[in-house]
Amino acid sequence: MRIDVVSIFPEYLAPLRLSLLGRAQEDGLLSLAVHDLRDFTFDRHRTVDDTPYGGGAGMVMKPEPWALALERVLEEQLAHDGAGLGPAPRRPVLVVPSPAGEVFTQAMAYELAEQPTLAFACGRYEGIDERVLEWAGEHFDVRPVSLGDYVLNGGEVAVMAMVEAVGRLLPGVVGNPESLVEESHADGLLEYPVYTKPASWRGHDVPDVLLSGNHGKIASWRLEQQLRRTAARRPELLDGADASSYGKSERAV
Ligand code: ADE
Image 1 (cartoon, rainbow, N blue to C red):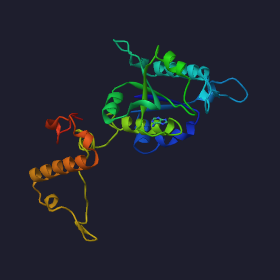
Image 2 (image 1 turned 90 degrees about the horizontal axis):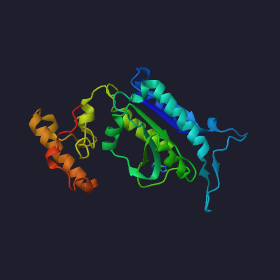
Image 3 (image 1 turned 30 degrees about the vertical axis):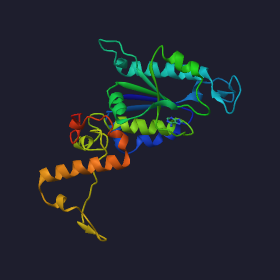
């Protein structure tokens, strides 16, 4: 997969070169390009913002540098893999992190992981001039996405979270794909508690069933724990859920 990120703080994204995703890049499973929005300005101050029409607090990101940056992204994505055009023409996905977007979920991570390319536009200040999103819609499938119902200072931290969530789903990135099946949200429930040695520690014992060697019993205990935990912490996940998928991931990896 090819991922392009546009930001005024490209260094913010540096941690995406570490750990599992860093290895995925070394192994050629993921190609990540980070673009500095200020490289697409022409004035001495490399200006990317201006005051809002209609008044109000803060500054708004100017449209001109965004169009040039996103045109560069389109060119590079096309050069990278023919933009995955193949037989059926495809509009590349452009994710715009915003507290006003649809909420990011594991299901969306799976959906994005199927794309040959992804682009992310990191807004700062009060946001990006809305016309950038309108114009970008002529070239991209534009998706404003929120990490959750709170406000960050800009899109960079949200992009780090989304790129990590998507990148780890790419084939070959996580060493043992079984671990993707058993984790939280894989089957619509929170994951069960886990334990390791020693069996007894500071007066706290590992549940007996996990030492029993009875795999059937262990599986039912784990499912029960998932249900209890989900009911206690995230009851809304159980509303309208398909109970027949519990204990099995709907996604074979
Ligand atoms: N930018 C600012 N707040 C955000 C949020 N909650 N999610 C995504 N991008 C953001």
